Image 1 (cartoon, rainbow, N blue to C red):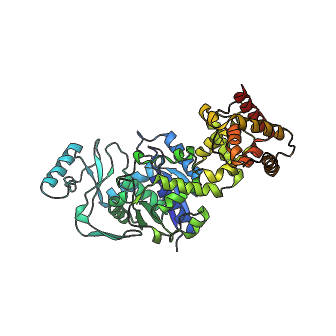
Image 2 (image 1 turned 135 degrees about the horizontal axis):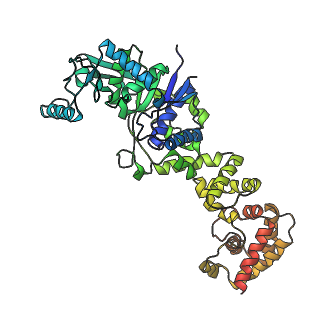
Image 3 (image 1 turned 90 degrees about the vertical axis):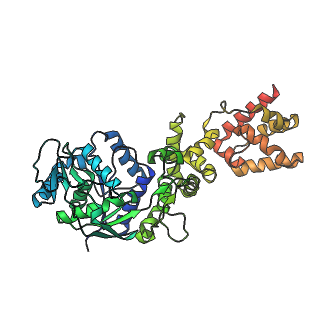
Length: 467
């Protein structure tokens, strides 16, 4: 049995969005699950719309996701000679021909066919004229006029297309550039691709490509057409549904393994399991479990999946990711060990790293930058509460081992001495050291902030309310 080879062929005319990312992931998982090779090919034959920025962005997106390729990236723009050799071969065999019809003439042919109730397509006017090469002429494939093109789709099952429904599609444009269908067939065949997983919007191209495989003497691969991802309104996914580029999700603080997990589950299943590590996906992935129905993108579900992966993520790694996001927000670089203490307090409470930065601000701002809401202070910090805070401030100044357990004991002793419940002081202390009514555990927060910051913040609040 030949080694399994899959590929991902993005076009560098835009950023890598989640539909393309899912296609890449499916092909990568299939290759990895079967011990095969994964090939990356950049389809940049549209020179006017392709650019290096998009290419770099696509490569960066795949690398961030952890989708490593075994071969490539290959660039179609560097393979024109190969494509032309195969087009010339078809011309010599009589399975392709030159056509002088203008775009306007072809459009008129299609319109006439439509009006007659027939499939709108090129009429084959130049098919038997034996024209030679000349400026402005295209090369068309001489498609069979009878019979059927049959293939078994790995996801959709048997497909039968009547050849009379196909037209003599173009292989080489008037400007000399090869067309998509010709280029991908030559590439996939010469690169040894055995499986092609792609969106079902490509389904109409498959019969044409199979005809080309046969005409060129190549064995065609196993095709599998994956249902599209739809928006909540069941229409084609777009930015209005929350569809963004892969790198946008990185900037928002999603973990790559969470995005992979979510995208794979959009169309693939393994029982009722929702959460997967990447190693699990490689082990379990199978074409048999890809559904036939379109999937609906759900931003809230993606957030949930990301929150679950955040909870189990390595603290050291999360601290590094948090550092990057902090710097992007305009903060200075913080000590890595300090952030390693902050991360566990926030991990269970956030859905994204971006949200983690929001909640981490109380650890990032200087003691003088902590803001207090006057209305909250007026309600919470009564004269009696202020007296207690002043006493606790003095107690904290005398605590040498500024750890959670020691702080809890100090507060418990004070509460017992004063004969008051903790709820009377919990919120005032929290507001004093964080500026917020909600935060991670109070004593854990104080331990991470450290004695100096906690004392300074209490002193500042006491001074504000005493003045």
